[in-house]
Length: 222
Image (cartoon, rainbow, N blue to C red; front, side, top):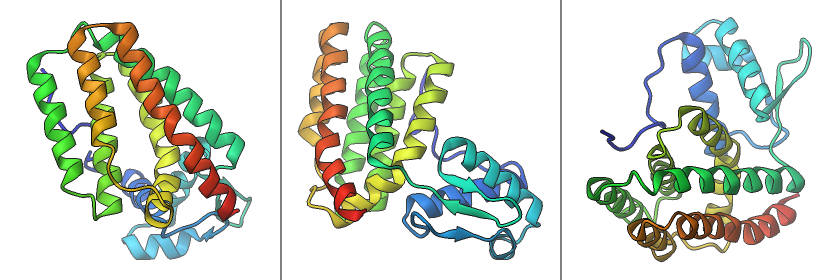
């Protein structure tokens, strides 16, 4: 059986994990912006750990494309350029489309009730961009988890880590309103039909429909 939310609130189990979570949250919240230099010593002091876990966290973030490591000079926040953002959204569309296609035959009324509750959680945070983005991510990750495909989920979660920071910045400073209830309700309606083709088409349209406005915002920022 599934419960919600899933993936975004795991407790750190090592100093490296704690450093990684701290840095990821800071980048996603816009505290560290594209081009900012990250100094291991300063971050280690702030979170009360040694430099080694911070450096390991840098390597992990570098592998995800969120920072760029520089030999003996710490790391630089990378951000995504327009082409990279397009690629990530294309991958999200394909992978979440696959996840919901697989999940369609497995969804129960209990799952749909949880998804409705997650939409309610989003509505409660329309005036809090950071919380809205987190709860939006909770909705999508729970939805995709119903596919019961752990390797697929690992890829989807990694893609969300890449887009969370620009999404937050867009919603805080762009013209996009914090709503989207109707769009997400359409996903649930498609699930209720048990029509895998329709469910995949709806979620892919939802994801791809976000990209034009986000791209315009990022172009203006660069």
